Amino acid sequence: MSGPRRNSQGPTLSFTKMHGLGNDFMVVDAISQPFRLRPEMIRKLADRHFGVGFDQLLVVEPPGLPDVDFRYRIFNADGSEVEQCGNGARCFARFVRDQQLTNRRVIRVQTAGGVIELRVGREGWVTVNMGVPELNPAAIPFAAESRQPVYPIEVDGQTVELSAVSMGNPHGVLLVDDVDTAPVATLGPALERHPRFPARANIGFLQVLDRGRARLRVFERGAGETLACGTGACAAVVAGQLRGLLDNRVRVTLLGGDLVIEWQGEGAAVMMEGPTARIFDGQIRLPGDNRRRGRRQSGRQSERRPVTER
Ligand SMILES: N[C@@H](CCC[C@H](N)C(=O)O)C(=O)O
Image: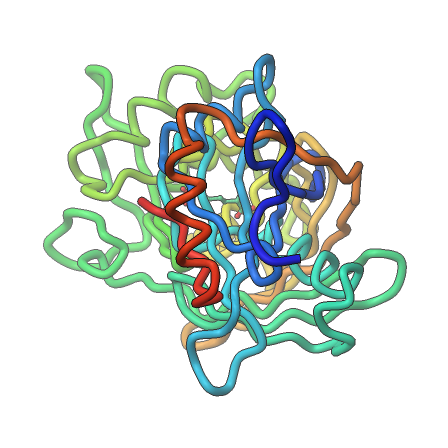
C-alpha cells in the first residue's frame, strides 16, 4: 500500500493499538503508508472520547542512518515530538516483527534521542539498551551551576529535592515515602513546566522498597500521569543509585506492572526489560480539515518520504 487508504469520506490511516504496562500507543507504519500529521490532528487522535486514545503516537519510518534498521518517531498526546520512549521502544520492536517489516531479533533504531538497540525475546518480552544516561545539567537540559546527585528546587512555595537525568528525554526524580500518597497531581505538572527545565520534563516519584525493588509513579511531559514510563523507570534507577539507595539491578513496580532495570554505573548503558501487548488493529479517517492536505500529500507519496509535521 502506498499512502493512507481512501474511502468516500477521505483518507484513512491503518494503525495498531499497543501498550507496555498500560502506557498505550497508536503505532503507524509510515514506510508503506507515508502520511503527515499536524500537532492538532495528533491531539484529536489522542483524545480518549473522540479519537483512538493514547499516551504516545509511535511512527515507523525508513532509516536515515547507514547502520540502523528503522527510524522511530514519538509524539506525545499533546502533539509534541519527543526524543525517547522506553515502553514505546519495546512495542516498536514487536510491531516491526509482527508486521514482517524485519525478521531480526536484534533491531537498531534511530530516535531523536540517539540510536538504541532492541532485543526481542519470547512471548512479547523485549530488552532495550537505552543508552548511557546524561547527567550533565546543560545537556539534560536542567538549570544548575554544577552536576549534583540531588538539587534543591523551589516549587509551589516549598523546596523539594530532585535528581535530574536525561535518558534521551529529560526527567526529574523525587524520592517519596509512599507513592500512593505522593503529590503527583500537583507537583507533577508544576515541575513538568518548571523554569529550570527549559524543555519541560517527565517527573518521577520514587519509593525505594529495598536495594533491589522500588515503586514509581510518573507524571509525563505532554501526556500527564501514565500507568508506566520506561524512560522514567530508567531515570529513577539511575537517581536511586546516585543517592546510594539502589543496587545495579532493580525491579520497578509501576501502576501498570513491573520493569527490570539494570545500570552498572557511570558510563554504562541502562538496560530495560519488560512486556509488550498488542490490543487491536484499526483504521481511522484522519481528523480535521485534511482532505486538501491529503491530495497534496499524495503528490509527495511518490517520493516515499514519510513526514510528520511538527
Ligand atoms: N512513556 C514513555 C515516555 C514518552 C515521552 C515522554 N512523555 C517525554 O515527553 O519525554 C516511556 O515509556 O519512556
